[in-house]
Image 1 (cartoon, rainbow, N blue to C red):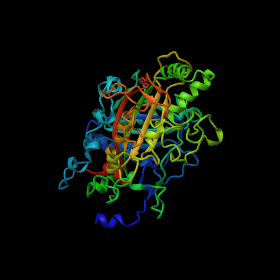
Image 2: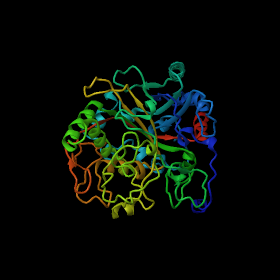
Image 3: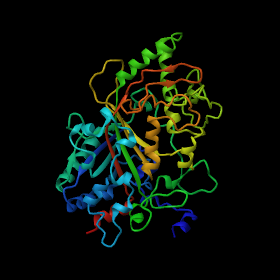
Image 4: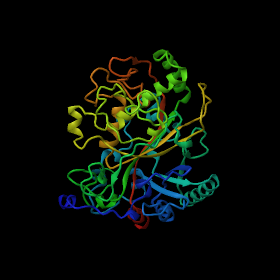
Length: 463
């Protein structure tokens, strides 16, 4: 049956899919509520109240309705909500993949040192304590305050415990749209996203198979789990979501740019040298221009370019082989033989959602404010899509063209891991930039299921 289904085009009912999977909302404010269920009755009561408010992919968001609501559950949360109690069904522990069932794997993500799990959530709780993530997207601070009160009143009524992991412990983690799309390190965001073949259009090799995102449509070409009923029906039209809360040390980054610009490019004006160092690390100028298209200067006409390859830059002369964008989206770079065998369909692709948090910082003096990124990564197989990218970020030996320095992503690598590297090759025959330090710190990670709306309704009404 599964093989027969794999040969048929899938028709997705978008009203069954949470809207976050299909699009970035681009609302100014997003609040991330973390809850723990105290009992099944309370969990189901809360879901009955909020399940009907969940934003789905069939909704028209042109008029900016608010709030937009999404719900995601940990494996423990599904169990504590009674959703996995199915007499006669195969045990859920055998059906669900370990990468979701067991929670975040620090080894796979290379979260060592200050980024290790014992430091997450400011040590107020652990990722295993979180049952539910409720995302609330609003257009204004007033609407966010009003709907925050609604969520909390409902949670209290149904006996849910709110978990607040922020530094002050007073408010849930709240993100905002970056000003003009510019993140704290100064880079333009939101340029490169995989395009998904949601309608199963034939002969579209440029589009990513929807099964890399949506669960419940197992095929021989793209295997996802759970594979068989009833659990494949339970996850259908859902997606796995990895939430990573990342602190960015902007002051340290700015100091690094100044020092390395003077060291590597003393012939350039200081600001130009710093921009070039930043561009080499990312693979794009900070306005978004790809280095491979414009290696000497940013070009506003190319700032949003995404249609390019590395065919003319196989040795990294223009864009360093270990630049961030060349790690997370290798395009036509050749994988090593071992990685070709592991990823016959090509580079693991994931959908990115998320926001910045905290105010901006200009200069090299740390003001003590918590700031960074709240990343949400959607995929159908955490172990084969998300974790490989994290491993490549921390050891860039996946590219067949990298033969001398197996370094780390200069921006997001963890220099506390056992096989750390502080070296970054700027290109063949060019200087090697040493002295890389940690510019980010992991503050919390969750592995969650973003269920389809029929499953949410079923979870609320069962029992």
